Length: 268
Ligand SMILES: [Zn+2]
Image: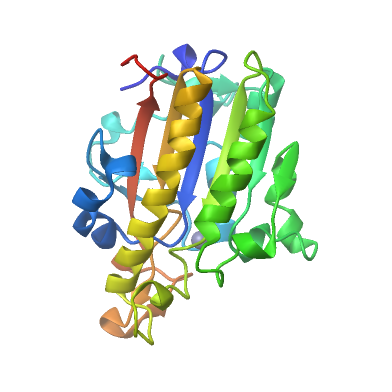
């Protein structure tokens, strides 16, 4: 496993939530996602929250999705708050603040949020809470769930910010990808309903756009640690369930990956 103490302070950190992506849909598309899965497979994990708001509070508190196995000893956390009285692993990075975003800011990181789904729109007080964790947050209509080119617009914005970030400034970039969240049937020509198939098509689309973001980070030349995972899945009628904010395996199983983006010409 990675040692987060070797990463914080030296690496740019990118956290991408692929909002609503089901684990089974991610696995079925693995070979068609060279940018997210080029260096390995999705890991099966359990989310700490069944919908966006709950899950992201947990993530920003340092509680990422948990490995979907019964071996507790293998559940080493990347982030943990300091002075809880609990025993922590030597590879875990400890933070002194209420959350990892302000913890990374305290280490000198510029913290940036690029929002996607409704909880990041900043249009009402509730939708300002999650972006409020960050020093800077951005949301446009074109980043939202109804725009069929949302990831393209989000990535364009991220690249612009990246170009304006000095090389010696460490960056924590959080991106909530909205494309896979409903409605996603527009990614399958002629489809009228969201389904696992339309999620898969939306994921292929998002992966293609994320490749441009990863290339921009590689060009920048700093080492990058990237976390990509879903905040929760969603049910499409299984056992009578529809949607999320409920407890069902289609919701609590999520795909998870962590990988390094090497500067151009190098491998880590
Ligand atoms: Zn969500």
